[in-house]
Length: 558
Image 1: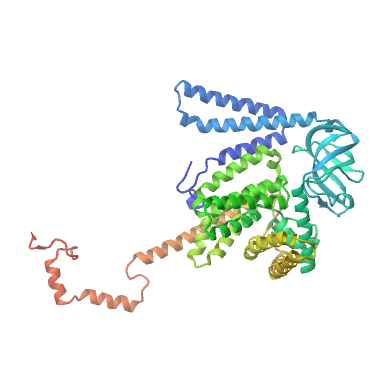
Image 2 (image 1 turned 90 degrees about the vertical axis):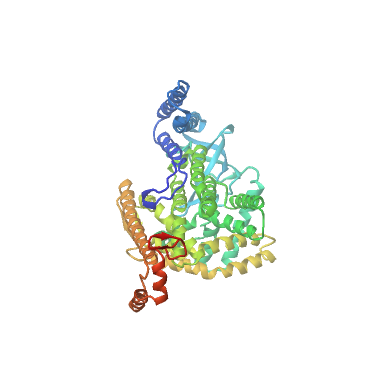
């Protein structure tokens, strides 16, 4: 399935064999989450029948293994995905939490940071329920809402007991129920040490940001570095949404690519071997996952960040698309509900854009004398923005006119804020709030003031234009409209770039093309009136043989 050229060069050559299995797993997961478990068991039987038929055809000599291997992989993955999801759905239906209507005391484990709901009086948090009405049960996921004053400070990993009102789940996921807390949480033990450490680092960064920066910038920095938007003002949030910069306020694959990439570049610059570099990169990745909370969305972002980082390494770009396909398959098999998560779709598409287009766009910019680092950053922003625009249009019903410009304007400072801000968060947690580490981190955070001001100004100026975003048809129609418009623009720009490249090659290939008329005329006169000695030599040399090869005079060869 490797192609030398696809769609006129818009899709570079690469190994796309894992794309089809990833799409199949995604589709089967969607069928299972939106349909019934009976349909999943039908897929299991159909996939098993396909594998058996392929094996029988090879056994009987009707086909070779090379001819049926890809079909066996597709059928096998479909059957495995459907079977695993059907077992999970049946277990959810048999769970005690699915048969309780009313109130009950539950013991849960906090899975993620609480999310504030409008108007801010309540929060929502994902939990794992492992005891109902005092009886232990199989751990299963649920969604809990409670008063912000009581539940806003819970930490992932904490075991909490509370009296809740149980309601049916929203559907289209593996949640067993919706829980509405009617009592304060009662802590059962302490959270794990790594979660306590991460909580202290996040809290210290909020404190130091409030000391060193203004109100808007102090709420923005924790969001850019750790995805912590608890201090972000509503006005700043609206400006970033209108300007198409909301993705910067969530932990995404780009955060992992920036932080891990900086660590890898630093260790390689010191002359470390590839093995040492790989170990350091893995340690940084695991540490950053712990720092920003190991929730499913963060782990998904970590997988995509590593794929995006692989795409940025020129010698490994051919392996980036297989890595993306493998990460998608593993993520969907482990967390089937990612199939309906908008963040997962945006991460996959953004990473695919980086893999497919960032390299060619970066080289195109470099050929036009754009500095290498700036070309890399602009290529990343443009590729990710173009790839995710259709999905954003489906989710919001609007297409951001200024989104691409805003991302290009802020991309030079995003990497700096991410790397320096992460280092400041770690250093600031050393010692007390007024100690040496906190003082150094506060000075570093003050140094990020101009970069944060620039991002706030770009979001404020571009996001408040009346035409910053235009409405598009809702649903699939809007995605098709946006995708078609962007494809047309990309095709035109690609065609114009090819024409410019051919024109430069023609100028370089044709002698005299592009020189002034006077030089051409004088050169022509010199060529037309050769010197006498040259005329004599030309009589001895044969036509087309002026370089000292064989000579002929009157048909005789010397």
